[in-house]
Length: 398
Image 1 (cartoon, rainbow, N blue to C red):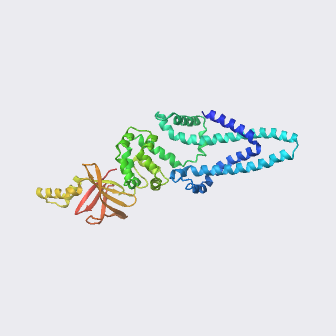
Image 2: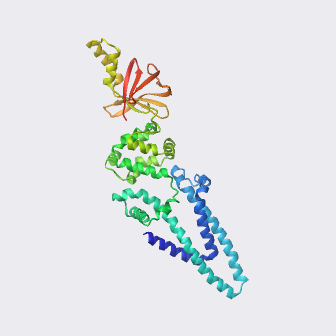
Image 3: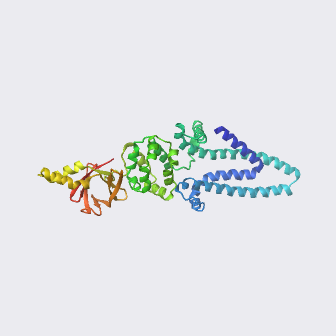
């Protein structure tokens, strides 16, 4: 397929060059060259054209500005070449002899064909760049036999580029940001390791996003969870309506991009070994679940000498407070207390407060007694929260 495309580009461009002549052919070749060179430097300017084209989704910013810059440069050179060709053709048509005109036409066709071959090589290079990019994202699904014929052909052509070692040349001019490839690798890692779903949801930046209704709905979508469990392809997951709605929402995707930033190495490391180097100094971040037995045992130590009746009364008084309670501390300094209801399988927000670190962690939770309190974190996975006259013991989920 690669050689077929190469011969087609050379043949068609050669015929086109023979028709255009050396002047327009030379300007066209220069336009292609300068278009490739200037596409990236000019992309910050052409990015301002996206709203005019109604391309407001953040994903368009990865490719479209460079493509627009390339097309503008090529178009400018085509206009300049057309003007130069017209002046020269008028000279030979009206001011030169018939012999000179015939000689010029013969030379024009031959030079134009040669320049067309060079342009064909550049066209082949330009066509192979999207094949190189698209084939990367199709490779995983192609190995599982879940692609339609056209997409499988794209993946196979990309593999042929690798065998011919042309991918090394194309990689140097690939405009795709490295984060896009890394995000694809992370998505494949999660889809092929369903046990990582829970770890992904506990990544500190995702704790904030997880409070949004769209992501809470995803977490409870049984059909989507079933697709992930059976390791459906990434393309199938992306086409799922609930996932597609999030991807097509520019405000939400922009928020995800802002929360994650440009560095995905920390997320990839967290999924691999469960440690976030970026947030490991903030021990409070994460989801904490109350431990009723440890909470009751600590209260018994605080109140020595309780008889069985007093202990029963203490357990009854504490039961509404400490049953199915969880605490989530997010990267935007929020603290969210939730209570799980087994009957409907949903969690209800009890209170939303804030946390800050000033040597020790200070929590401000409206409605609690006291509202402002200092917490302790023991050995990194046990949190002690004074609340309503008791010291509640929470264990970190991950």
